[in-house]
Image (tube, rainbow, N blue to C red; front, side, top):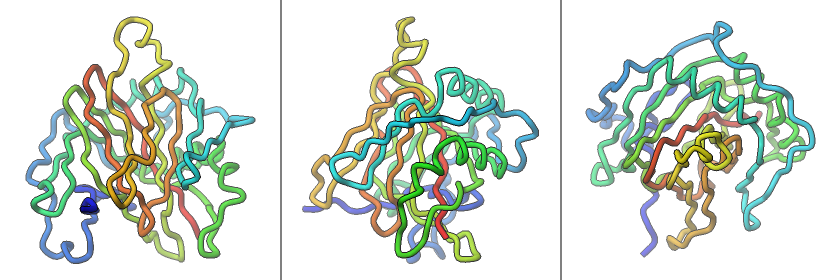
Length: 256
């Protein structure tokens, strides 16, 4: 039997709030499981706190198995990725849970930061994401920018995000998010790997409508992963972290 397409418990909107499926919007409130672990952050401007991100040339874009899944190795340098992790830890994460599949939400257990920072979004966009989407259009719309709602995810040992889909978000003025952007800030290739602190687990796995595995992406530090979301989003999950910590930067590609 095909798996149910669970919506993420805290599907990210322009403001970082939960966006359950339409039939649940009136009755679902934010999960009672959302308890702060470290006084997480949400809000505006970067204020110069973020590390510089250098424009990347000659990026290698890989399309996975003839799908709309794209991977881009070395989108962030190791130094850039580590700097984002250090700043995120300094800001502090908040635990993100869910009501669970019985309540129509995907299982979710991770830690999260949400900031609205148009300048950071523009910097990441102009560092190379814009060039990746130069020849991609969807229903007459073209990619214009990144969602200024930037999220950081942290998965410690035992944490995971169950099978779900990512919703498309209407940003107004004809603009809508249509691709998810994930940039792995830890994983293979990090300095910790050589010191015996390698990340084990935490793969992002995509499934077809029958529940078969289409692609499995292991976290590699600096790797960018892009996939369609909304109506054509593939069911996917973040597998459990078995050892050490997984860090991810998340935004969305905006089309207009």
